[in-house]
Length: 182
Image (tube, rainbow, N blue to C red; front, side, top):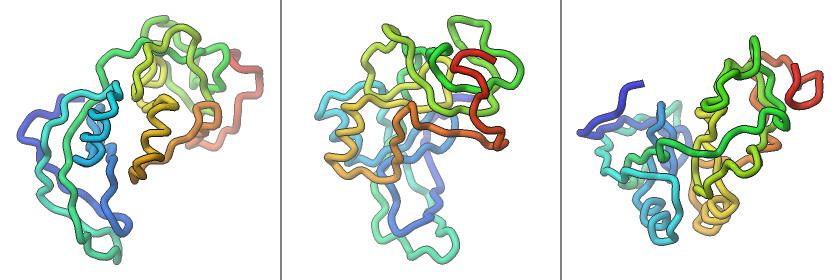
């Protein structure tokens, strides 16, 4: 995917009553409210970089959603490019399409389903928000980040413990064998 370059302009779609503090548009970019960004920096959390202002060109309402009263100021951020955290393939419950990953570095392979995952001990560098190797499309956060979100009441984020994450678009069900085997 190409890198998003300035000028940063977006069109948002409002599904509820208010726009959220956290938006995951596409690729590696994230939109965060100015309120979120300020608190993130003040509390010394790690894992995001950039913090460039975004112009909200338009807000479209989905269905008959009420008109947005307040459009927060947003900033575009990215997760830090390289995380040392890696999915523990032996202890995670991931159903691979053909075969498990063969590259120890990226740990990427086509997945049919995820029924919980865990990180390999000793690989996580302590970032508060990151994309682990083996699940680069899956934002993962620290317990400190989860407490931060709850304390500030940030919106448009659903935090699920990694061992409880379920993604099964083909409805194939969980792995029939113990974690880490086909």
